[in-house]
Length: 171
Image (cartoon, rainbow, N blue to C red; front, side, top):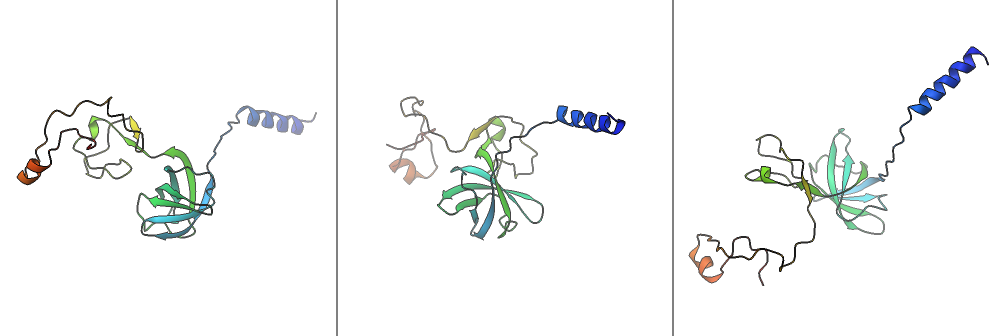
């Protein structure tokens, strides 16, 4: 073979050895309309309920949304960021992730947005643990008993409606 052929073969061999396949399963859709913090999206046929979606805005920013209303022809998604950034015609893609937020003691006393991002100007959260927002609550039997009263400071409420500290549901 000629030198040129050897060079082409060697170049192809290097590219094949360095190839790293990516399995990006994200679906792409388009915003049909935006109203009252809800975006109507077409083209996301396989999106799951409560799945996070990402809007690629014309300003070059990414805004997160949450797919809630799954219909035959479109999807209704709650915009979890700046709603003014998302406009008709913007591209949307699925993430494959359900809505989850940071969890742990680092959140005590902090103010966070619906995505669990701090908005209190006290710096980032130092936690790696996350938990799903929508999950099945533990059964009543497996929970710790409510044995400590919670005082609201309003005598009428404290006298008529006893509330237990840690109470999750009233039976």
